[in-house]
Image (cartoon, rainbow, N blue to C red; front, side, top):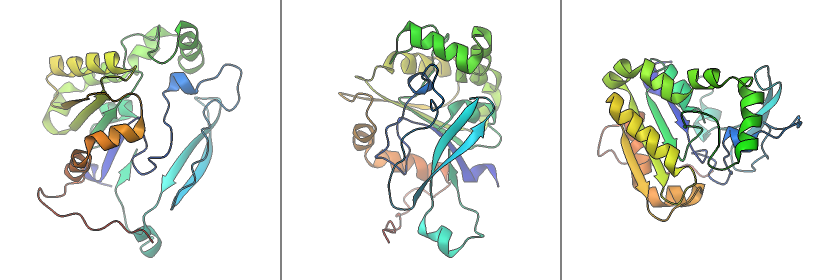
Length: 232
């Protein structure tokens, strides 16, 4: 699959499953819980729920897949893919064309305290997910990966950041935006007045600019009229 046919998304909402409630790793991890990475199943048209065994999480991890009607009609057709992981977008910039960060996290320089959780929960996440190693957390963070791949991303990546000014993650998101500016990585920074950490409010506030980003990400020429959404 060519790089231009994939887009990597770290968002507070899954683009095609807007009714789901997204959580950061800090929020999902529950100490001494075998279901820490399994989120509630979302019931929606053409959406299916799956799990897989993860060595990194030491347990099952869940995910949802949305398949458009064209997938049923043309099973062999290669379709664009949207993925919930900015660090992969910055790390594999040659594979993914675009990165969308919407109220994302963790984006802080160190995992000492999380915007939507206290120090104790942050410490639990650091221990369970990163082996208690602060340097390892830094090494795989979007901040460090952006530093390492800034030159390449400047040449060809499409990056946007969106965050509500009432979102608890606003501070780290603003800091990350400023980090990208210092690295001279082109990106858009959109602040949504009065919006908190809420998927639907975020999408509603973005309006058509949200779809404009995805049209650009998938290489749709400017001014092209979108086809009606298949609701069958």
